Amino acid sequence: MIQFLLNRELRSERALDPNTTVLQYLREYRGKTGTKEGCASGDCGACTVVVGELVGDRLRYRTLNSCLTFVSALHGKQLISVEDLKDQGRLHSVQQAMVDCHGSQCGFCTPGFVMSLFALQKNAGAVNEYDPHQAHEALAGNLCRCTGYRPILEAAEQACCAKQPDQFDAREAETIAQLKAIAPREMAELSDGEKRCLSPLTVAELAEFYAANPDARLLAGGTDLALEVTQFHRELPVMIHVGQITEMKQVQIADRHIEIGAAAPLTDCYAALATEYPDFGELLQRFASLQIRNQGTLGGNIGNASPIGDSPPLLIALGAEVVLRKGASSRTLPLEDYFIDYKVTARQPGEFIEKVRVPRATPDRLFRAYKVSKRLDDDISAVCAAFDLQITDGVVADARVAFGGMAAIPKRAAACEATLNGAPWNQQTVEAACDALAEDFTPLTDFRASREYRLLVAQNLLRKCFLEQQAPKTETRVTAYV
View 1 (tube, rainbow, N blue to C red):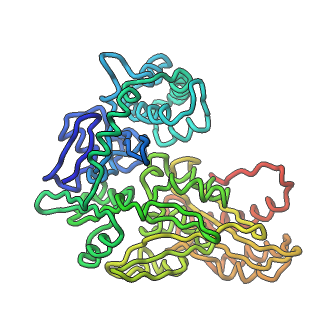
View 2: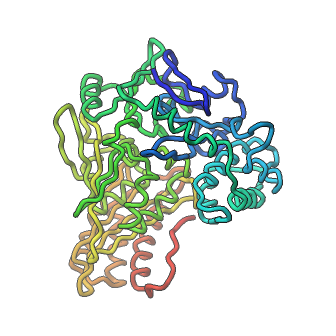
View 3: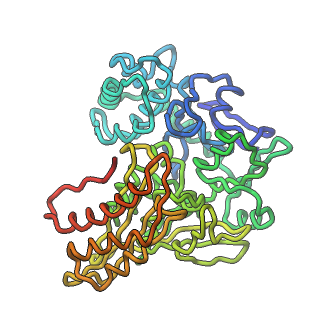
């Protein structure tokens, strides 16, 4: 059984297909049709909902794509949809702002925008505090096909600057008490009699059940796994939801590395990674949308073994490691050795990624990362490049260069590194290293880019890294995109 709050109503679900998404649940089971399906792939934001959860004794609100969220992920949380905002016949202030600023045109995408604005307002600071960058980030995952962004941004400004207490503020203490009462205390299970999803609370429980059921699918954020249901119409007979395991959601900074639990949402990884590596933080802000980052995990981005995942090239260049767990045994593996072939990894049956260890930054190394994509926001990369260089007295003492989108797996550029190592850090060396990239990679042509384009872009990104390092430190850097 799982329990959660549907706004203020306690819901206990015992017999429900665990393949049911939150979008389906709202529309088909609860008759709440305000939440729309636009793409069923987490790209348009029409299905955006807000989830409230306890962080200590406080309530935190985050947006999610309901089309990519299975109902089991709601266990112990509060689900808020667009129907819940209106109170006693009056529109919520974010809804009123959309009306006042003429932010709704055809209206299909409007509920998603409203929910993103609601979360933006809730997470904003004091009254009259409006951050345009924060507003753009909050709304980047919502697509308006009527080209109504200007009035919607005006609505965001009005909603934040005219922020007033609402019914959620008035009932905050009551909501916190309700969530504490239903906080998970034992492993939960959701099953319709044929398919099942278990939610363990500890790494030990996960290890035991997964070792006994190695064919089960691990569910963290589900932003990739859910596509098998929504896009390919497959059934997932057994899932193990790891989102309730506190140990795997922690981000800890040690003396020499950052330790990130495999179930930590990307949003929670941002501060630690951006502080150590600003380029990593900049790339994370372009990782899909805020809705996806609130749900997707670093462990999942590694585990799905996509050759165009945004984080693996950066992590490989930095020398990151993964801690793999099977039963009571653990082993640590350099991330570059985790990927073997397209969608093939070194993970054994019943083994899972428990945590990721990222070395901390040191002042003697230069780290640069670039993502090239067709859109700046909410898009998959055509090429992703990462350079971690130690340059001593004008000579490259150590080079780690990694790319995504250039091969069947994210991988290091061995020939390029060999050309750089021990050579002067100058234009001639860089050009030789660019030529060496043709030895390292024979990229594919697909709908994102041709093989010739990918190779030229990879070479140009190395040139860009060199030119930026030569430029005055006051010069503003611009992340690459198409």
